[in-house]
Amino acid sequence: MSHHLVEFKNVFFRYPDGTEALKGISFRITHGESVGIVGANGAGKSTLLLHMNGYLMPTSGTVTISDLSLTKKTRQDIRRKVGIVFQNPDDQLFMPTVFDDVAFGPLNLGMDETHVRERVHEALRLVNSLDLCNKPPHHLSGGQKSAVAIAAVISMEPDILVMDEPAANLDPKSRRSLITLLKTFAHSKIVASHDLDLILDVCQRCIVIKDGAVVADGPADEILANKILLEENNLELPLSRQNIKTP
Amino acid sequence: MTFDEKYFNIGHLDRISYQDTCVHRLDPRVKVIATMLFLITVVSFPKYEVVALFPFFLFPVLLMTIGEIPILFIVKKVLLVSPFAVFIGIFNPFLDTRTAAVIAGIPVSAGWISFVAIMLKFSLTISAAILLIATTSFPGVCHALRQLGFPSLFTAQLLFLYRYLFVLMEESMRIIRARDMRSFGKRGTGVKVVVRLIGILFLRTVDRAERIYYAMLSRGFQGDILSLKQSHLRTSDLAFMAVTIALLTVFRFFRVTEQIGSFAQELLR
Image (tube, rainbow over all chains, first blue to last red; front, side, top):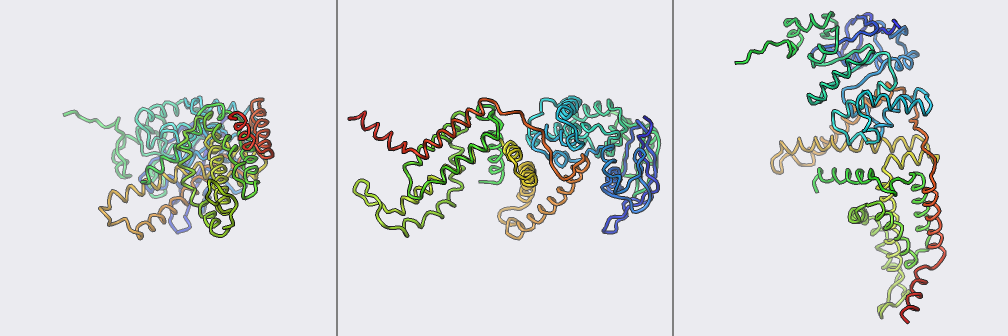
């Protein structure tokens, strides 16, 4: 399929309190691409992600997901296509057990019992968390919570996977297994993060956002090597690109 | 007790409920119904009935033993809520002063008897309710209620209450720790500060509620929390139900204690 695209055309968004969060953002992400979104704190990354699922509607401009243009009517269909993993897994895991939580999405899609069980099993297997099935979320460690939160989203088999700071609060080993996991997904991926090494590992393309507008868009290799551009955006070279000389 | 200790105390009840004993394995629906029947039977006794209540302690004691629930834990919980029952019953001995019985030469007023009856009923019902949670887990009870036909809005609220109780407590714990770290001695722990902390906690909760709602929408939430049908009742469940009903009926309608007493007298004679 070649139509899993995400397209923003000249999107403006103003919060009710008057803050202009997005000021004419345009980009086009095509099927199977994995794209990192970086920028300083408050640049508009989270606001941007909330548009991909129709929680926020553009004040002006258009958002197109697959072949649907975002309106209040198409929101429900778009939510089936786009799975968002939020930054804080405690907000995402709202059901009393891991199984119930991963089953929440498939049940809402109206699947029957055997299908739901299959989906839950498969999603938990993908993130190596099958043994957590009957645990309540508050007995899990941070890394386990993140893994389950991802399972809860991929159990709906979205076309496009959107993640907000997926590696925040993970220890290095959990972070590494998350990166390995993300690389195995064939979905279109959009990852907003300050973890530039993660983006370098997972994404081919990188978009830099500043004050609600795109300031750079290109191959992750090139953009994450551009020291001046990164420093202008409160970022720095990925650690793996810094030539640290041992004294 | 500090806030931290209280927090881990609640977590304890929760951990107990995830044990794996044959009481825990019973179908939640059966346990909910059994507990309800138990409560109704206990409450249905007239207000001066004391002796007939004792056999009912068999129910919590059995559940506790087979379910491997520490007895001290349950007793502590019952004591914790006991002031409510004490205040309900404490005036009976003063208002109802006619002599109802003479035990070992001391006249006992009807008020004292009804007070004891209230306390007995209270400990029976509260320990049964705590045991239900301790052997079934809170979500288990919620799902059972939903399957028994309770409105989904009601059970969904309970599920969220359970899920976010822990998150909210952790949040409060962090706020309190942050305050304690920077307040030395008494300064900074006054009412004014506490009021502000509660305000902050409220604002954070509102924000969190919004994020949770986003997360629910993103997974296709449309107003009802669905859950999978549970497996069918097994024979052990039905047996448990039958035994409970039989025992409750016997304890309610036959004077078991008196008969045991007269039987013991026969033996001693």
